[in-house]
Length: 132
Image 1 (cartoon, one colour):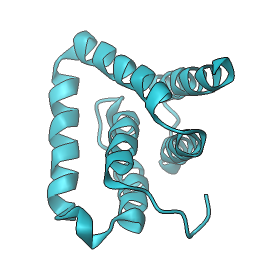
Image 2 (tube, helix red, strand yellow):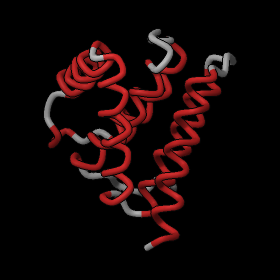
Image 3 (cartoon, helix red, strand yellow):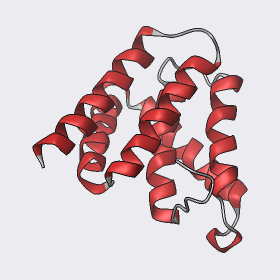
C-alpha cells in the first residue's frame, strides 16, 4: 500500500475492528501491538471522519464487549471476518493481513491464538478471493 492510498471511514472501521481482535485475542492489550494499530489509524484518519479519540474508544468498547461473550464472541468475530471477505476489495484485504502480521510480530511474543486467527483470516480472504 503506498503513501497516497486513501481509506474511507467505513473501510477504516472494518480494518480497525478486525485488527483490534488480534491485539486482544490473548486477553491482554499489549502496548506494542496496540501501537501498531493506532499508528495505522492515525496515518489514515481524516478530520472529516470526526473525533479520532471517540472512534478508538468505540473500537475498544466493542472489542471488550465481544471478548466478554467468550466462545460466542469468538464465533461472532469469525462470522465478521467471513463477511469482510465478501465486503473488502483485494487491496483492503492485503492491508488487513499485513497489519495483522505487523501486530503479531510487534511484541516479539507470537501467541498460538494470534497465529491461529491470522491463518483463519488469510484462509477466508485468500480462498474467498480465488473462488470469486
